Length: 129
Image (tube, rainbow, N blue to C red; front, side, top):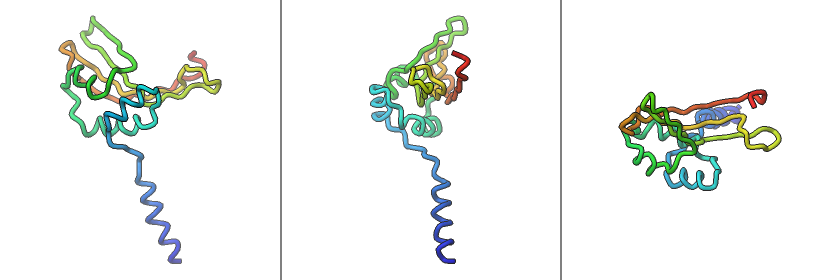
């Protein structure tokens, strides 16, 4: 009977662990260099929650995170977006056409300051390709 009560706190402790990891700029940039994003997804949650990113300049974000994997410009709307890959899974044949992609997306205004920062999770159907 005592043995059952031992497992309950251990189980609850494991259940409460979300896998969040403190943001570490050095690890973030190193993963981009090797295109290995094992820790980025967990670090992104901490980054968005605990770092004041809004109103940072593009240069400040670039210094903190390194170069983004994607930049989209919309001059007519006077905004541009940068995207940092957090996770990417390819199809079952190993071809690099992602089936799921998770990204950290920054929206910058015409003054090149962060207007918003979100985590975007996209899942594609194989028929989409």
